[in-house]
Image (cartoon, rainbow over all chains, first blue to last red; front, side, top):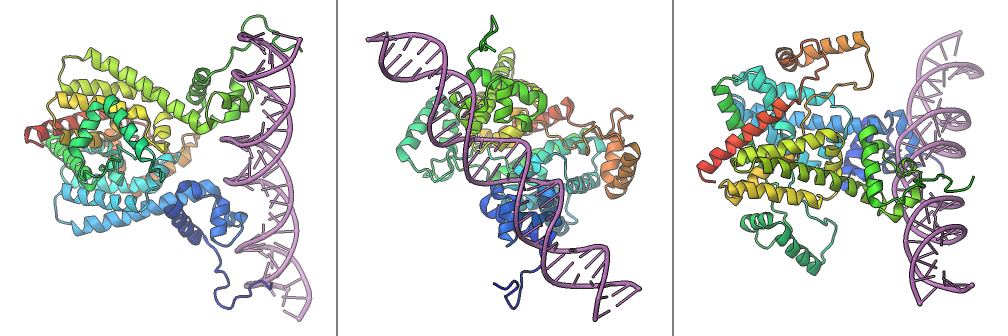
Length: 236
Length: 236
DNA sequence: GACAGCGCCTTACAACGTAAGGCAACCATA
DNA sequence: TATGGTTGCCTTACGTTGTAAGGCGCTGTC
């Protein structure tokens, strides 16, 4: 039972970075609710209170997670906009937003966490600053740039708006119940079910899981960009 | 100490409705974190466990809150669209969205609660169904209607995207610290501060609290509606 | 008048975040 | 080399949360 019995790697010394990395791994794997101080500590082979020497409480931990994600987004966006250097404003912005989206898809918990934070993380302001820069570069007034930011909304950070989420996401595969539910839905929500029927990309999938694809994201992007271009032309 | 000593109103008999009403009042007044089972029970002059006879746990309580808000939105939207009957699709939809927004402004906690729910509330589908109906009535294909729903995103439910939230919303009025922070910001975020300076509606307000007005909401609405109209014209 | 059950309460428990303090190992200094 | 402070982790304990289990009084019915 000697402490520090192992030869190499006698438990490397914990740190904010290690804690944050473990937290992200944990949340990626098991979702936000799984992230408790005790659980994270266990994941690091340590007791809960030990975390407090490297992190200012749970709130600070969450702030760290947010900052890390924003950092990833910022990095991805910068790369994306670098490869699109010289292009017009909309392809540059589009690349930026799509890059942000890939990060968000890697961390599905990020939107919920970000929007639950009591204050807007500092990194987000930097991100917005870059957007405004691109818009200004594209010949937009501050006024339209401002409104554009609002219009983009969470889209700018890569949030995918999932209109339809499977009603029972858990391993529920009660077929007859699902069919009954579907029938009831068809009566109560005629237009929605008609749309689903008309739009179902893969016809074999009755779970309404056909949304939130890249297509929708880019459609919205084009919609907004077109609108902004016209707003600029008519002089905002 | 006789129980039931009061003459009239000997504590009317609790019910799901009374509990939900009290919960909404509580959350309106003190925010979501204040809503605990014990606190809500106390507000009703009752013990915590008594709530479980009328509500299926806290999750069920939150579901009830969501349903209530969606109900308010639905009612307001129906009224709005009724007064706009006969108008074209965009004024009808616009009225609907603005009505939803007034409800959301009454319940600032609603967006956070709604987006934190693990499954989309049933009422939302009904709401979307009405939107699709209006779009179809306006001559849109299901495909564009589908994409329109995604493009609207949370806007359809009246969510106001607050790009800027006061960094320290608490009664922090440390003037010199705020000024120092502002100066640092001007250096780190030149475009954003320039925009803020150019856009500040009331010049005396340095807290960046000049966003998220009705104007921005309607601007985005017009942007999207214009775009959709053009998408319809070119045949989606 | 016995009895069923509704409505509320009491008690208790596990899990959470975290305050307070302890203890071993290190490191600089005298 | 002895010593005292600092660092890094642990132990214990507390208050708060949601809620399972069961008790107790009132009310209505046969």
